[in-house]
Image 1 (cartoon, rainbow, N blue to C red):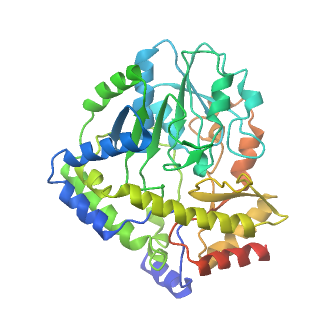
Image 2: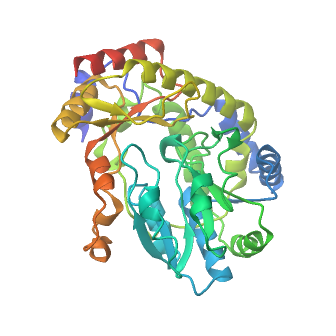
Length: 409
């Protein structure tokens, strides 16, 4: 392992850009440590601020985005116990099917559109009439808004709940509305690399009293982080502050056991209450979120103007009102082109990354359920997707290096 680090250090670029990042500041970490001595005052303050910001009636905090989705599904299962199916896009984060299985429910898939990550709305019509359908989960993947309004117009079963997956879109808007306010219930992730980070964490929002009542009962019974886990949160926060910076990211990237960027299907994850330390980290979160959004918007605009290439297709909607992205997605014309682009960018430390390793139907533990179904657009996206960084660590020099690399390919 030591030789791996030494050899990588000798060959590494001067800056190694992480694919995604939400910078933590030292004052965040100090506030987190102070928060541990303030009982639940910091948690209550953060919940209050979230309800005010999103104009939401109910807010709950848990240990991760996938924990938030699991809690939502368990609550819906209590409301409609005869319904057992959850409909999701066939290409999405593996945390989503992990949460569905963790909640003891069944996964149903719909293919995505040919030009993006939203449901194929022609395909989904026949799936929405299933009497076992509990909920549908539209996903704002990488921050690109799903058309939740159109989906609601197609839904003719009032018992089916719209669960808005806003895990990657905190602070984003769609047609003047805040993402996370379009569904019956929504959730955000506060994990590393999201729009705003507390190392890990999840937010649930809803205006529906019946859903909130069930969620409250579940959350109140969740275990807390133990002392070792709380110390690990502090350690991870310091590591994120130091090692995610482009001048230092070469080090964690050179350590294979960290499995950076690896996407795992793991329905055995823990679900816990949010900690006072995590809540303390959020002090001043609204101004930081705004600061990060402005930076990502600027970087997104640059990439939108400067990554046109006949060998790739941009997946970001055209127009002046660009979405608030976590990563800038493009689709290569072939697997060979994608391999060449990723390899060249990796040598330059540019932070390009693949998407998720497969469509959901090809996850080893799930594929037997979908062996007679095909999802060609999801499969194609898994094979050809490339994401480019847009986070606040990017400099003008970094952006021009990315532009040069895309011009060469």
